[in-house]
Length: 326
Image 1 (cartoon, rainbow, N blue to C red):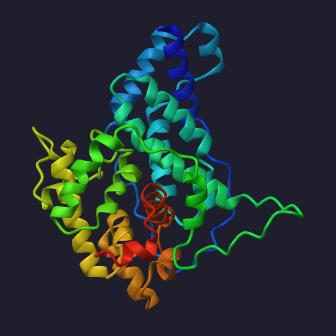
Image 2 (tube, one colour):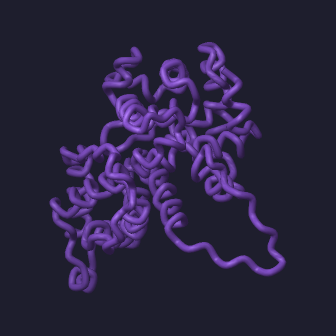
């Protein structure tokens, strides 16, 4: 117990004590829509903070208490809000700067009984953070005998990055059990069956995954979205039902595809919201995801190519083939 408490204490104590280092100002165009502010404290942080503080007070050795001040509630909330602002912002460098703190938070969440479902959410965001770090770091110079890499896809920025990152990854453990259920629902509603792999990106196939902001389930529906799709969010919470949530996801994706006309834009709207994508298309007089990507948040700019790369890696269906499957 003492070892477990020490891991949690050190993880929590490092989450919010220091701001990320300053990063260069983003060169994104001024016409980008403003990031959505994190106007409310993330709702589960109170319970998490209280538990961590209790463990710190009860189990932390004296030498640990001499070296670390447990972060205040304000510091904890500040970390959560700043991380969300970085995800909603336009700077890969700003997001990458949160890697140490996000790793510390993930250690803490994995250690606390009952908080594994929140760890799933943060683990997915940590993948975005490390991808942002890879984008901002200079590439090593090629060796003389190294073949020149192919030019990256211009129509789907960062797709090649995600293909490289996913190359050695295996499907989550729950995938084999859940995929047939999800495919049945997607096929029933006429949505491309390959899109069931969206659940890996959203929740790592954890039906109980939840975010601090209230999203839950395989496809991470917020309460309002779930209710709009006919799902109950309270006793039972249909978002945790693989069959019901898959049917709702298929219907939502179909509607977004009908509105925007292609899957990159539909997936961008799934992540960022229909309004933001529509405003970006109008402001830039654009028709494609690549044209509006600089006007979207770094989270969405990483999310869309990650979904396509995951589908390609798991099923062999490329973005071109997916675009003709509806």
